[in-house]
Image 1 (cartoon, rainbow, N blue to C red):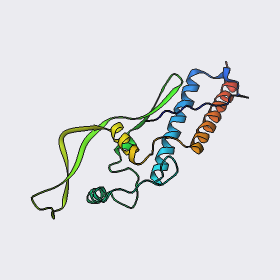
Image 2 (image 1 turned 90 degrees about the vertical axis):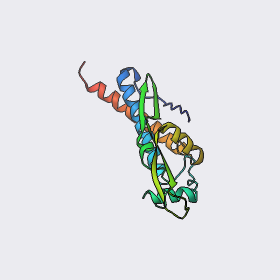
Image 3 (image 1 turned 60 degrees about the vertical axis):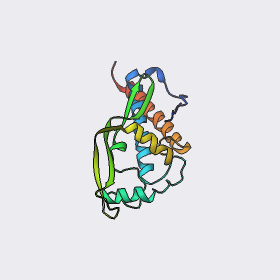
Image 4 (image 1 turned 120 degrees about the vertical axis):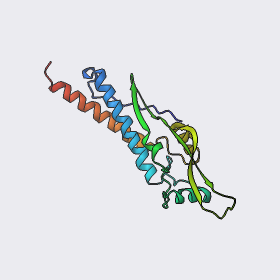
Length: 175
């Protein structure tokens, strides 16, 4: 979806005192903070650029209403599975936030010959779709994955504070 490089001005930080584990822990924290930023912004119905999400189509609103999941919000939460599937991983000095897992494809269809009959919720037998694919498709219509300048500054500040705390902690621990 998108790549983000966060660099921190290390001026004033004695980075030689940092262990690789402390750096990985700080990066993992940045990943979780980013996930929280995405979730909070999405719950406000706000896109990554600060605008509001495009409204749902009438057909999709009907699907959500029949599933008992429609309010006047655009939180990208039909089932909650996509947003709850976000995970953080750290390899070396790189943090990655991805969507893991798959779920059953869910569809709405009318039963019987009359279109006047209500829609029913059903699963297509064996149909699986990845949460990453669902996130990608949602992001094309309602951009929620990414970071804006304010969030980037918050992530940089968080990383710097976390590294400074790790350095202070390493100075107080006996050798």
